[in-house]
Amino acid sequence: MCTLLAIVPPPGGPLQVAANRDEFLARPASPPHRWDGSPPLLAPRDEQAGGTWLGVSARGLFVGVTNRHGTERDAARASRGALVVEALRGQSVEALHRDLVGLDARTYNPFHLLYADGHGRAGLTWSDGAAVRQRWLGPGLHVITERSLGAGDDGPRVARARAALDGAAAPVPFEAWAELLCLHSVPDPRQGTCLHVPAFGYGTRSSFLLRLGPDPAAALCAWTEGPPCTSRWVDGTVELRAVVAAG
Image (cartoon, rainbow, N blue to C red; front, side):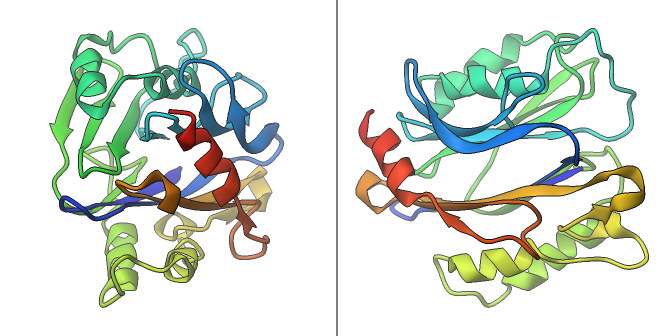
């Protein structure tokens, strides 16, 4: 599971992203930090497979991934985290959308990949393991989960997320995003944004917030290393602006 929310702005407004990563609690990971290369990135790291689940590049490109429900994981396929790293090295939203058309659906286990920038451009590529599909994302709130696009029923979770932002100021304050990422659900925890399943050693491992507009000097981000309902938020704005300025 994972929950990825993005407000794609009209021209001139900031891209806003809020994300929870749900994963096995024992899987090692490191918090967002600078990755050198061309271009530099700000991203957390999956220390088991070496990739990441989201990040921002010096070119002002955001990329985030969720798994896709309904199929068994094939250990012979490449890590979806490697796809995110490769996508973050892309030139632009348009170039990435074009390049992903030729992706072999058998390379990675099923996924939903969202990519956007601070200029109102956003796209989505997803795979069920047999075919790759795409769409452009227009202005407004988009909620992507492991059950999106016909992979299951995420209606209650999406509805709760939209209701939580109903009437919020624009741009949405980080405090409102943080509350949204703390939604729990009983008896079915899958309908909340913050997941706790200790019996299976599984749950929400981290959260990430981003605001990215045409002016790189106004970029903001923050994250938690642990479930957002109990963890301290870390201000990563200095790190984000340093990476974006490198572009």
